[in-house]
Length: 82
Image (cartoon, rainbow, N blue to C red; front, side):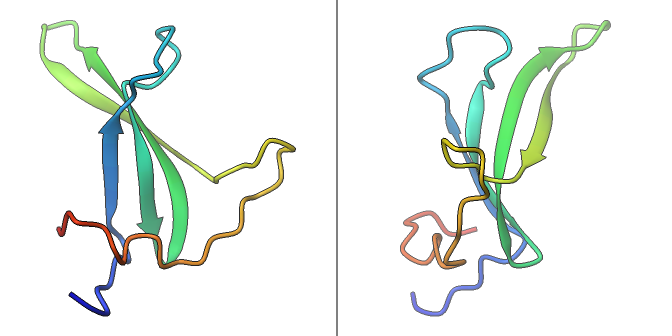
C-alpha cells in the first residue's frame, strides 16, 4: 500500500517497561493535523467500577528536552492499517 495518509491516526502498544502507576499502561504515537505526537494511556476504573482509558498527548522530546524532529512518514510501512 503506497501513499497511505496517516493524518489524524495513531497507534498504542502495551508498555512492557511500566514500573510504577505513574507510567502509562500503553504508549505510542498519534498524528494530529500532520504533526506526530506522543500518546500515552492508563487503564483506570470509575467509582461505579467501569474500566476506561485515560489519555495524554504530548510532544516528542529527546534526552536533552528538545523537540524531536519528525519526518511525518513514520506510519508508511506500518503493517496495521486503520
